Image 1: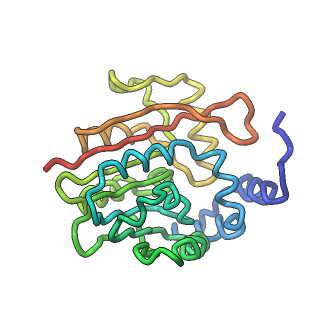
Image 2: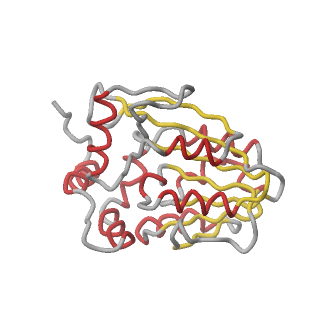
Image 3: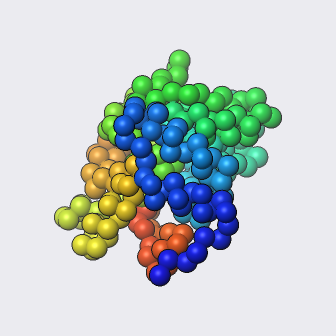
Length: 246
């Protein structure tokens, strides 16, 4: 039995999620229609769902040079900026890139007092800063991008040699994963892709293999996290930090 929503905000989000993401427009239009009604409660609800973000950013922040240029692709509401804490002041330029106006409105509010944070409405597969950057990361965004391979290639291309790529996201293993990676059960490999696909989240078992091949120098953590209103179930997620070859 699924517990009752804890608040009216949760109910609105769950109702929108049960209806699923619209599929009759462009990717940007579908995102806007899906998230506009959720935006006011977006961060509070997903705080219980999107695990590993603080750990990812802590690892990335440790490797940043002074006056770094950082890009978050699929940055949404800008919530992840807060995970940098006081270190955000040491970043020369932070580009927060997303396609959804409803979420970017919240990001602009958060960035109002952060002159080094630039909020950009753009596609993660094509956005390119004027010069190579020190760090690019995706936080639960790669699975939301239909052409995730193009987004990944674009992220790596905009990095300086020696720059860092970070990703935290949901996933599931292929039937025969690489020897160093976890193997998931039949239930995990079939339930979670179908559950998330309804809301436009595409769990692709090729993600990790592609990441490891593209950025061989990396650290990887594979874990599981609880999901709101699905008691007893835990969804797999990973934290990946890689370094572009010099």
